[in-house]
Length: 248
Image 1 (cartoon, rainbow, N blue to C red):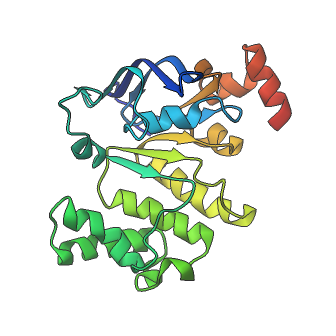
Image 2: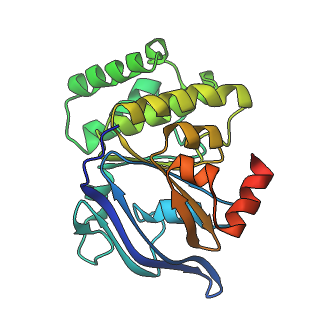
């Protein structure tokens, strides 16, 4: 894991208010360095998924600024689609196209958005499938795969765009318990290879083993953060202590 001190994402005082009453984000400011693996934990409704989805403007903040690679992506003139190409997003539910083969799912965006030739996109797609041990599934359809295989394909589909950061929104919470391990193993490999990652998850073992930094969110704010050793070994915030006592 190589953290070189270069700020990839900078968040300044973002608020998100739904329906004039629900304050989902309440003045969050954070910086994510290149090469970091930032894991976000917290109770349901704490704002962690809203925060993650704000990083690529799937949720548009009510106020505040988000900078990605030095550009204010919350600015009116910004072409957000161009920046999203550099931000891989993996959801809880796999969002694969059911009528396309696995290889077609992977190559669609590189061909359409990066203007790669079909031959080049398929060659790179097969290399990625080999990397995750699923090359024999290239001609299969999503309905023929297990949940764990689908989620690994969803990750590969994001990697095919050669992103600078990967955002994971509870990527294992829709999986059967025995399939969680294969997805976490792939995520560990990505972290080991130096991919910048922001991960919302309930998998505390992953946070302890892989995170460079763990954030605890509650009531739309980051209440505490630190290295896994500090975070789990010496929590200070009373709400975090209560949260950890229930889940560890």
